[in-house]
Amino acid sequence: MNQKVWRLAGPLIISNISIPLLGAVDTAVVGHLPGPQYIGAVAVGAIIFTALYAGTSFLRMATVGLSAQARGTGDGSEVRAVLARAALFGAGIGLLIILLQAPLGWLGLQLIGAGVDVEPLAREYFYIRVWAAPAAMMNIAIIGWLIGAQNTRASLWLYLLMNGLNAGLDLWFVIGLEWGVAGVAWATLISQYVTLSLGIFIAARMLRRIEGRWNRTNLLDKKAFKRLAMINRDIFIRSMFLQAALFTFTSLGARISTVILAANAILMVFQHIMSAGVDGFAHTAGALVGESIGEKSRKNFRDAVRITTLWSFGFSVFFCALFYFAGPTVIDLMTSVPEVRMATREYLPWMVITPLVGFASYQLDGFFIGATRAADMRDAMLVSVVIYALALAILVPWIGNHGLWLGFIVLLIARAVTLYMRFPKIERSIEH
Image (tube, rainbow, N blue to C red; front, side, top):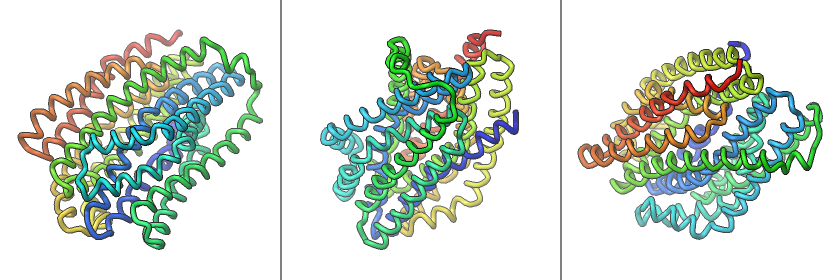
């Protein structure tokens, strides 16, 4: 089982870490422009898209679980149907985002409340990048399907293309052509559509080797669509609660000062790198748990839970050490603005303890995704966000940005506890 876990998790870890590393490149290329407003603008624009796209994370989460379960039952026609349904959902949502770009952009900027020096740049970023939405949504669906089908190597190639091309275009557009914040947005847009082309090609090649056929009746099956809709609804609600929490974090930091906004944006890159690493095991757990449920094997379920959790804990310890020893150097690489460097170092200790506190919540997410227990994920997140909001109401007025980070720690702990309380129901649902 260890070998199988690493065969799946290895590509996922590399894939996931490439995403925040791209965020680090985005931050670094604008971090050397004159003033913190450029970092702040990309941070504000990025959090708006994170909120929009995380709201549609059901495209990945639900597809991982459904694809894994279809694989476990050996139903090749259903494997095809899962991909088609998810891709159609993605394309439709992406087009809807484009149609609603004006109110979505206005609302996002108003809710964050960025300063007058940041908002025009953030607006420019948003209204360029928004045109990548259909490709971004379909890429999420295809990658989720690949993970559920246990072809994580293919998902790695897609991530490397998307993020490598994006980073290269960042450097060319921002530094070479001096396009500023707009260059970061154009780099993202182009890389999303190029990646979609490769994703369609890879999926088509895979399906030629899988038994089964395209079946219109199966694809449009009302029962399957109802199940998909219910899973998507619950994961959407869950994701909106989580994004509201992250949105509030960015907004409160922006209201303290532009320097704090920039410092928190840099530290969130650390957080994203850590979560991406341990999420490799969470995604692997989702694929293996889903397969074991399809096979109705409680033994395989227990093995998947135990082994992926042990490896996830080990990686969290690694990230604690990495942030402690390398954090100050990385901060200096990401920005040359003295006041931002000083502020980021002040709050770095929160990043050192976050991996040990947070890994359990990510790992439990993976189990629930594989089991498609979306309603439990929704309810657990609701309780966690209420606890988080109460913590912020007490801590931020008391100790400022330190209170904001302590509230974030409270959110991670609450997520783990509320999910763990519901975890035994998954095993009990698996037939012997």
